[in-house]
Amino acid sequence: VREDRWQRLEGSYHGSGCTLASAIAAGLAKGRGVQDAVREAQEFTWRALATGFRTGAGQALPNRFFSR
Image: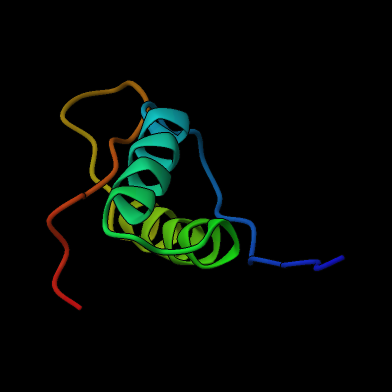
């Protein structure tokens, strides 16, 4: 059993769930094992949210093109 902890980001985001699911699917498609695909997807999603942006007064959107 593995437990991951990520710093909670303030605010609300639109697209966090689909970003995570897509990143997991991409990792699996690249041949990663489930644990590695999930860990990498969680890190990608957290960074995408941490660098997210607002286009108006609504929820922030993930920045899926952030620079590592």
